[in-house]
Length: 200
Length: 216
Image (cartoon, rainbow over all chains, first blue to last red; front, side, top):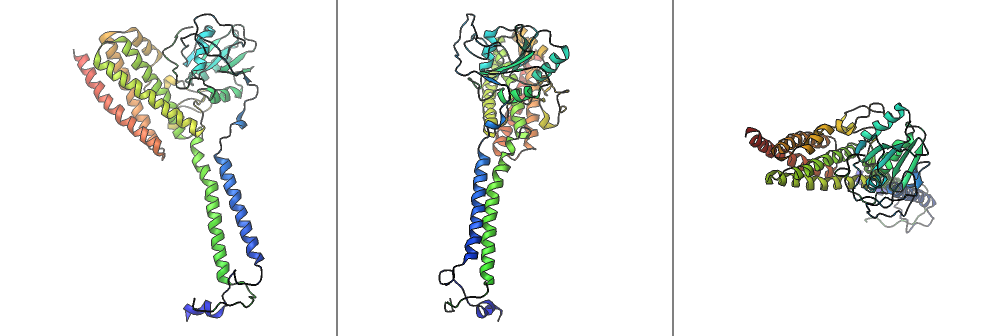
């Protein structure tokens, strides 16, 4: 009868009662187990955020900057400043292009709110300025202004982070904006880019 | 169960044992593959170009302007109905910006796209040359309109605010509906649905308020 075919014709084997060591089975399941472990490790690695691998070449870091409000002029160690004490009123940074230099103390407050400040040396070619302005107008929480004493054609500043570049089409500009606009360096996440100082 | 246990050495590997082993192995491998692939699927949200990330970024920018206009009108009028509406918009939409920012944090997605807004809805061009400004986003007030609002006061400011905010809300409802057709993410759907419903009802309210003021 079909129901008995297997049982009747073949002796039953049992790993516990079998005399020979089932090396084949052990090897097979060991391999399967290794694959499973590898998959779990891979899955674990995938879920971990990869922070270290997107470092932007040339970014200067300045940590430990103070954050007091003052209406007095502030002497900043960096030029342009990338943080420190600042004016109680922030410079508006709603994708804003200013055509005159800004007061450092107001711009630094915008950095505290998570903005990226794009500055350029006066005299930069018009097409370079236009390329920068196009970027800034597309990016809320960014602002742009000329910076007379700048020692590079272009500088991008976020709170405690700065990148100086020679060319407005440098691909690191977009990378810097994507990483630092409202980025993890922001001392005051959620603070506005409107309602502050609206003119240079 | 019916047969006695056989201890005789087996010459050939039993077919049933092999089948069970293959089945078990397939099961283990299947689970392992699922474990490996699931995080990859989930990290689809982290993609800077996903509709969810685009929506979170652009709606944050859109909301930020609504908050600004609402705060502006509260400085420009003493009318209680308009001030209450503005308070509602400013506080609600600030809160929602925070929610969307937290999503982007969680997804590891950037808070901005320098290539320009609205690309997830198929608007604007790609690449740098045509990158559109934030004011090109549907429903956004232009810098000139914002200056006009800042310069106005009383009834004139209320009428201008209501007109600008109705336009702003209409585009907001459209954006919320657009992401609903593009996402399966429940938390995104929930917020987008509540935005569409709340802003739609505020549009009706503002149209009534505008009619009262225009008719007078």
